[in-house]
Image 1: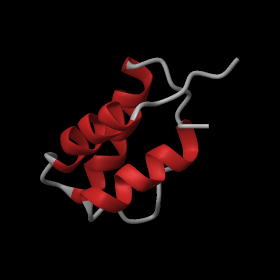
Image 2 (image 1 turned 60 degrees about the horizontal axis):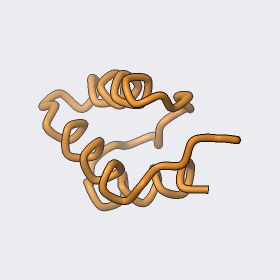
Image 3 (image 1 turned 135 degrees about the horizontal axis):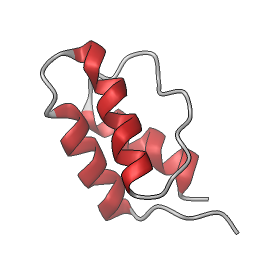
Image 4 (image 1 turned 120 degrees about the vertical axis):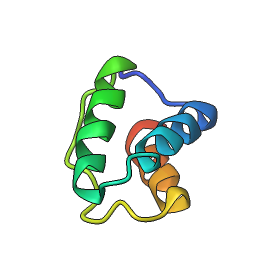
Length: 64
């Protein structure tokens, strides 16, 4: 059974990812956060510019 992500965890990961100032490094931060919480990383959205869109993307990929 695949691991499911809660809304709270998606928000926390999005907050930490968006805290990275350099947009090119946000994908690296997102990958590290997903691995740290036991989720298999997938290719992130092309632009990580808005927290709300990142939360939505995380939930669509990992909330099942």
